[in-house]
Length: 234
Ligand code: MN
Image (cartoon, rainbow, N blue to C red; front, side, top):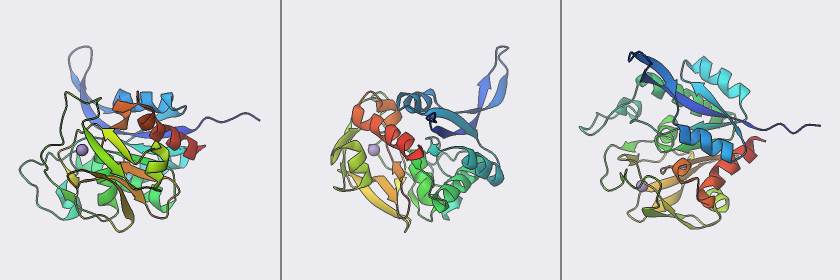
């Protein structure tokens, strides 16, 4: 019997890309670092281009696990709030696709890792809200360094996977979770009190992190998140 390497679906959003003639054409894209992290963890990455809710279901049915990527802000109307001046809403179609994908993955107990914007969409998809702006958590020059600590709940899945109860993380977000969805459990906190790690109640492996472990994949404890996702999909 041959071993089947898990196929990990990575969400891909719409973005204008300049082609060879300098013409900007709409593409479905995902940052290279997510693909590299999945490969380094032993999985086969495949992009899930955004589309309708039916497209989300069709993609979800064919992959072994899902990775929800970072990006621009969730439109505040998705959590019944007026936009703050600092909010830079992403494509509403991206919100719709990812909310449909995440809702189905939770309902069907599929392995899932939600990163940065991903943890925010996860919270919104399950009924939570976001803080629309929070200072001190956007440090682009140190994108692949640990710049603040996150304390992990002892005994949580996140702590077990990372093999620690405190980890140093990068920070590339200006929004944060506010009211937590009832199906989420906060298992990681920054020293200034932000929720930076969550688990989904009733799911075997569904985690969200506010930092970018794909940019810290040179550190074993962060690569372990992707290894655990691949293992959960096996
Ligand atoms: Mn942070």
